[in-house]
Length: 82
Image 1 (cartoon, one colour):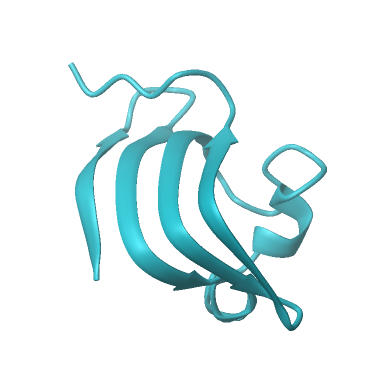
Image 2 (image 1 turned 30 degrees about the vertical axis):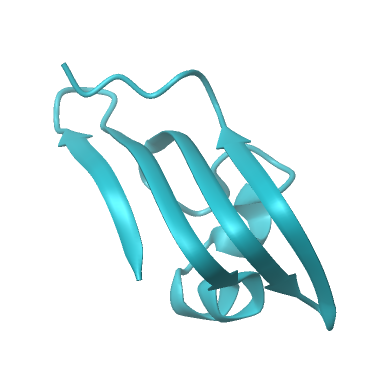
């Protein structure tokens, strides 16, 4: 289960802001389910039509057969859902 807050700003340029927490998260499943996510990891927002600003705290992160505990992923600038 994922908990937290997210907001979508539709003005130009559009942006998605989020601050989320999860007990366990499989990064490989995420990459398959979100078009452009593979490019977003290292090259801006890839094919995504918006800016992403977020923080994702995970107790256990799984990816490519590896497991990491106590992970915080940050994308872009600090999220701001004001």
